[in-house]
Length: 238
Image 1 (cartoon, one colour):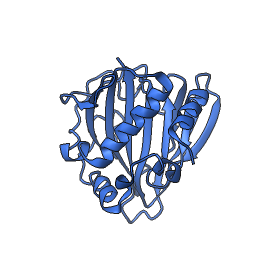
Image 2 (cartoon, one colour):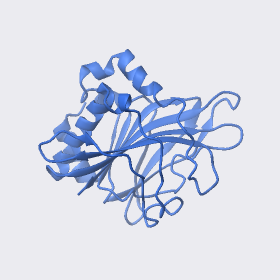
Image 3 (cartoon, one colour):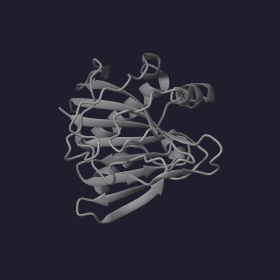
Image 4 (tube, helix red, strand yellow):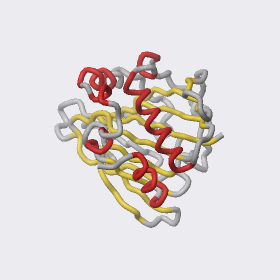
């Protein structure tokens, strides 16, 4: 098990951390882990719109998006809905344009699970960087796969997001295999790899110091629905 201080110290020392669900759960309030609460949160990944901005022509990704503002010593607040933008230096596939995604529902972003995750990540990242003003983006991703081809969690390949810190949290995976997260330093040398499997397995990344990517996912049984649901929270100092 890890505590917040040790995890922040590990992230500061290595630039990334893989936190298995049992350890991550220990950092969350108990009410978040009640099955009814978590199951309702996970169910919000169902019926999301298809991401139509994929320059590779793929229709394997579903997505919702929201932006938040964090100011020192103030609660995190949701900002007005706005586009997601990445420079092509960071996203060679889909960068360079404003991408308008459907918003994360208020009932989700205001719920106990989402708020606890915001509070935890802010605490962890400020344990590394200090109390700062943050531009925070939240992404609900579903990657689908089936007999027509693999699903690509990171179709842009090994990349950085152009932010300071990133949380990638496993929410649910069904009937898939593979999907291994790989971490490389800025010179391209491998630093580690791991697979998010259980709900609340988590990857924490110092985006200024490392590249990250995820291998394609394929179905175990091509005749059944197969998907990978994650929550991504990014923090950029402003």
